[in-house]
Image 1: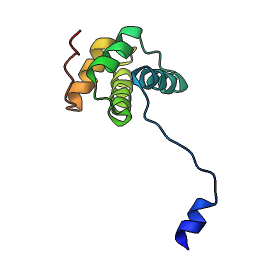
Image 2 (image 1 turned 30 degrees about the vertical axis):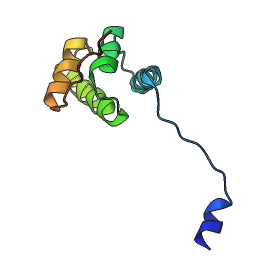
Image 3 (image 1 turned 135 degrees about the vertical axis):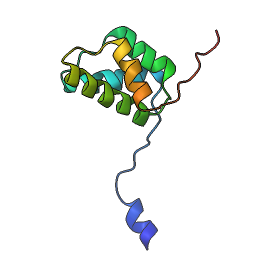
Length: 96
């Protein structure tokens, strides 16, 4: 009975975002808040932060908080500081 009720509606397939899509989503969320994230900060986030959106958004939130508190723009050093404040373990860069 429960299965028949759940199966009648629309079904969507949800796929995880790839690296480029994650960076684009972080940039989109930053733009929605009026935050201009420099390209080097976005690239660093994509390379060194864990691949889950939750961690990336937490760092964006913390960087925004620090920038507002200090009344300055978000920069790569500020993003790194935000990451340290949250004690997020960084990924090692991939070997090429």
